[in-house]
Image (cartoon, rainbow, N blue to C red; front, side, top):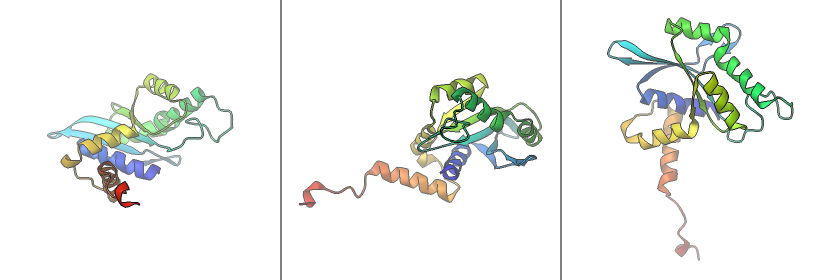
Length: 176
């Protein structure tokens, strides 16, 4: 599901005017989900390092290796933030692409256990959190004004549209 959510997140960023670089790699077997820049005329006005984490039914705390392992939720979230956003190699990779350390961090987040712990830790680390449902709702509301660039993103938007239209719902009068 993560690839689909990443695809939707990329479409959402592009619909908001960002140029998106997907999956830049860095030394140490690492990869950033997205680096995004937004231009006004010929100058960059915003830079983002974006990570996407989604689960329809989370069974562990964020950052916990496996269910039942006993990781403290606060410790797990701190490990996750460090691994995804604050590792020196990740910062160096973003700086190399952006040409500066002046960029914001964003986590596009699905369902998680201990949500309040995650949100507090992200706020403390100055990471903006956008929920997956907010991204989907924004895309749905603005669907007439945007063109989704990827097949999976288009299909998901069509699915959301169909779900709202309630087509092919059985009519109880004809099911006798």
